[in-house]
Image (cartoon, rainbow, N blue to C red):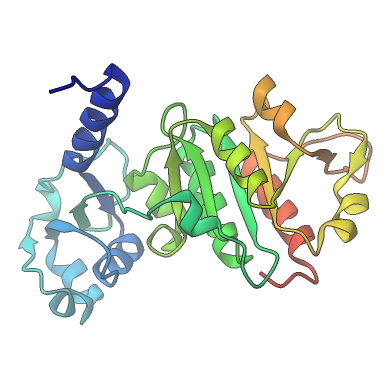
Amino acid sequence: MAQKPKWVVEKERDRRASARETVWLFGLHAVRDALQNPLRDRLRLVLTKNAADRLGDAVPASGMTPEIADPRKFPVPLDPGSVHQGAALEVRALDWGRLDDVARPGGGAPLMVLLDRVTDPHNAGAILRSAEVFGARAVIAPQRHAAPETGALAKTASGALERQPYLRVGNLGDAMERLKEMGYLCVGLDGEAPETLGEAAPGLRDAPVAIVLGAEGPGLRDRTRSLCDRMVRIDPAGGFGSLNVSNAAAVALFALREGRDV
């Protein structure tokens, strides 16, 4: 019997390890949304009596039996300073399926958001929230050097993590090439780009668009930049100043959503 190539073995090992990993979601809003999400694989629910009362029917409707905890000795491995509000839920990460299935254009001009080395969970969570508001198909980030699905990300996303696809891909550049094959235009954001977002947006309304954003500071990597069909900038009113990546994503989504059938 032929031996599997090393890369296949490593990919299968990583997939098995990922399936075993769990995440603690915390905070009333994040926990409530996860309890109401039928796609969530939920493992353990820890609540204070006050939190259980505030969550109301969401707990019995989920079919879970919570562990009622003393608020002074909350038995959950959260980072110090996490504002859990007496509610924590252990889950497995959501499986949103294949890029091809989520991104397939069909019947409109969809928007996608691609993140290149955006590692801060608060930024990623805020981007997921904006992506949901403005109707993006998905937010895509690499498996490595990107914000993983965590309690902090879920809390910042304010429920969007349960509804907005957050796909982690092996290679962002390969994902961009696949999107381009499917008819997407990859539009990168860069403060030094020659064209403004306002100038570019009207001509992009009828095309599937993938907005590509890099980490604050380093920006887009060379290959990511080379795969962008256009580079645009958000022009500050006063000739100086900049936005953090989550705010830039919201502005870009708003500008490109105008007049678009997603």
